Image (cartoon, rainbow over all chains, first blue to last red; front, top):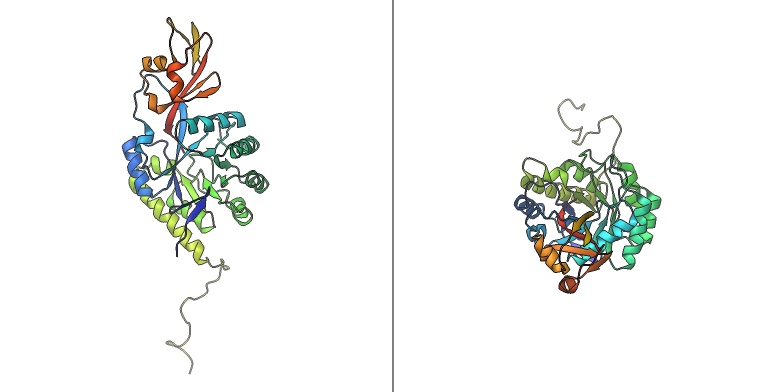
Length: 259
Length: 66
């Protein structure tokens, strides 16, 4: 059975989205993207540093990948909108991850400014995926505004703490029609797997892969974990029981049975 | 003439096009995007845009990000 990931009017094989920050170099990043099997890869925009003659990151992203520029650095809707337009003009296409952060300690998203940016950019024809705090009411507004997906955080960006927002995300999975993609905080393959087991459509990972000792191998571990979690979800995970055991082998018809 | 590039003031001592300024900085044309006084300019127009006093430029490029 083919289980394609549908988002933004397109179909993808992979349910793992990979970020490109914090890799030691672009060559390692490229191999990690390839091993991850990711079809959607995020990048950011920054002011150029005239002193540096670094390579162009876009040359190291496999051409079959869909680029999604994030609006990191934006503190309000207007800045996010500006970054989105710059990304499009720079040839990165029209997929945008809205990321509006005003809080520099926890890096938690500003949902209201994020919503404003979604409203404007959807009208301009962007495919818009907002990174947000997992709030059902806000997610509904994002969906109504035309967001292609909603991306609740699992834990603060780069914290590797896992899906601490699990029950709120589960509520979103039940109630929101567009894909729910957990973004931020996922620090290990088991955590990514957990996201998929509870029915999330996809997971976005960056730090956990990029700063591991072997990013290329870690990328493949995440790939497998996301696939495993998705298959488990589709198989129907049985309800949790109580503390008592329930035998999985027959208890009758063996030694000691009464005649 | 004084212009502002990426938030910093710069003195320019001769008439320049936007393209000439960028080349002077050693930037590769195909990897940057330019906002000129708040308007994004297509690469094809950079050669014909003359810089004038108090112009504000944002010059950005793609980097790694999550």
